[in-house]
Image (cartoon, rainbow, N blue to C red; front, side, top):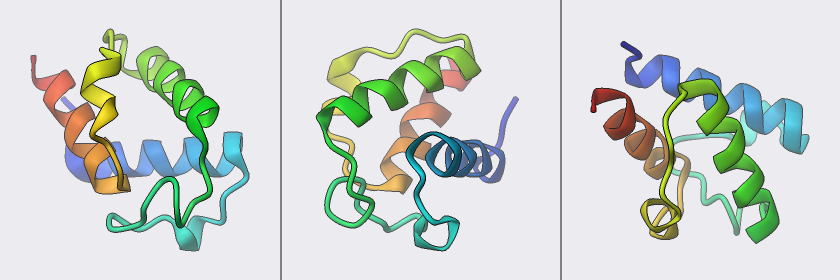
Length: 82
């Protein structure tokens, strides 16, 4: 079972390694699109990476409302609990 800190660390690693985002910019409140400069294609790539890491299928609908790093953590936390 992963806790919020582990999920955030995993997400931070993905954002730094795959999307070349500065680690300092990744805070729970950071907006994925406005502050971290992700676009819709990046968001799809992020979902794929998260699916690979969690082994869980992520429904696109669950990610439509995701705007911040914290929203992603909440979505993943909900998935790994199931």
